[in-house]
Length: 205
Figure 1: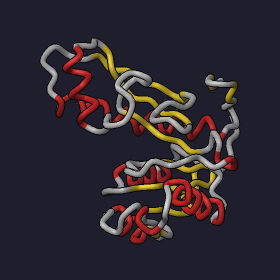
Figure 2: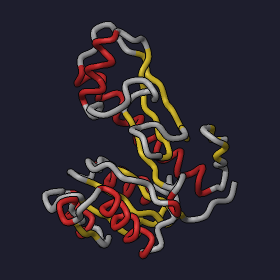
Figure 3: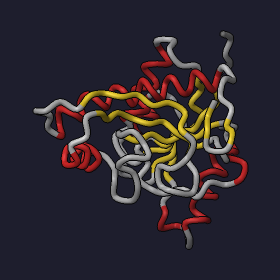
């Protein structure tokens, strides 16, 4: 299957772990993307320094500089558009975005559970894994999806599952799910690069 190189922007708020994983995958020939820009929601995001070290343009756009969430979202996505990013990857970005019309089904997020389970406001990081264990479910995993205007609610592109073991801790479960998130994101980006993704309502085919 032939593929093209996808121009993308990556949004971060922390260490840039996903950014590092994606760059390793690019070097290994596993994912055909061109990272045009990294945007941080705070100057304290250490992933910005890593991006600059790797020769990727990086900048900060802070929520406090804009009067409303809509104007903040528009500014972030406008910068992505200006650098020619066809897709935007939310890689641990702590701010909620209002998706502008030109980026409908073009902003990609991931969630460390099988959405729509354990989704919504307040469900992020280890809180998700803690909720999984508290509820006693037998299977969890991760979800890569297109963002819409609700938390972790958009059309699902890829899901991967792992069993929940009887003696799992939050840390042990997180350690099994984290690599799957990277795998699922890489798989989703490959599908997009091969033009194999069609969104029909809530379904991705």
